[in-house]
View 1 (cartoon, helix red, strand yellow):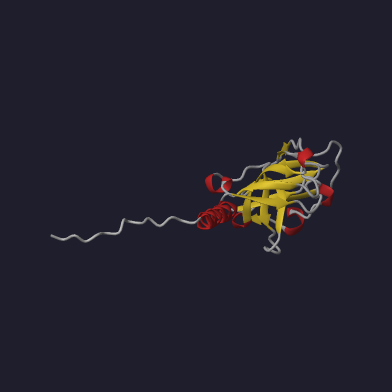
View 2 (cartoon, rainbow, N blue to C red):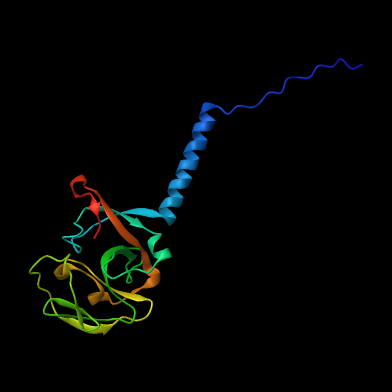
Length: 181
């Protein structure tokens, strides 16, 4: 007969500190993944999209939208500036690959048809441009503040692979909280 005594099993319990650290690590990892692949905040440094987006507005951008569907005319898009991809720009998508863009008498024409631009201030006057045809897998981008916007009229077409995402809404300052665009 064996009369040995076994130690009762002792479950290791995590300390409060250990649990807190695990929670913090998981939260940081989720935040990084969400920012890399889902949504990201951006700051508007200039007035090139006024009146839609104002200088100092902060917006949330979806990085998923354009993985699922193609950008559409009228979308407000954040992208890497083609002449310096370390910088981000935000402009409105005006035309897609294969479309011809022209501006005559401050009116936008795509493939010869006038396109209404209800987001522009009434009475805004800006220079004639084009016609130019957008190459495949590229876009023609313009700021809503047409007289003060460094856009496709200056630096050319935006390649598809430089798109970061679609502007969803303005979250700062509080009086301006609204959908973007």
